[in-house]
Length: 133
Ligand code: HEM
Image (cartoon, rainbow, N blue to C red; front, top):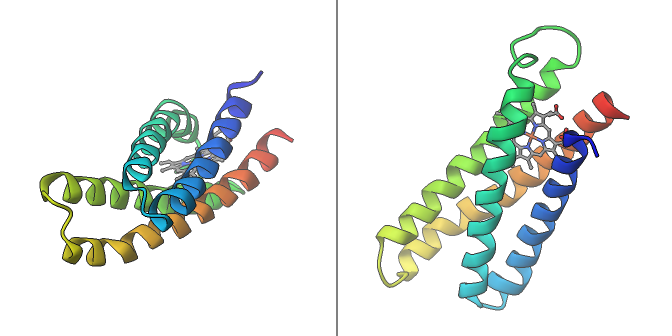
């Protein structure tokens, strides 16, 4: 199997876990499950981005040929949920007791992460079908 297809399958699995972690973790207030899902998704996602997407895209991303704008938008939209996710995780790690105030502040960031992640994912699907199908 081509690495691009492996990455595609990994990213599909990650977005499913992210969705399930949201529905079964945060909505049902099983925070332990929610945290476990988030840490593993972000960890595995960082591996796919750093070991595959960035090396593969570095030759394209500054190349003004047709199609590269899509990659550029994908990368910009994709980097935001990663950075926001890391900030939210660090905020919860360094703040003991999970105060309600922090939870309230973090909620819009969590929703933004989900939305931007989904948009970056859909653009990733378009890139995959453009390049490999
Ligand atoms: C939430 C964030 C992201 C998601 C959900 C995501 C998802 C995807 C998916 C599903 C693909 C298609 C699979 C493939 O082509 O192998 C893809 C490809 C790609 N992504 Fe991302 N991505 C994200 C962030 C990023 C970031 C931050 C960058 C660069 C800084 C990036 C650069 C690329 C590149 C260059 C490809 C094409 C790789 C190739 O197949 O040669 N992505 N992404």
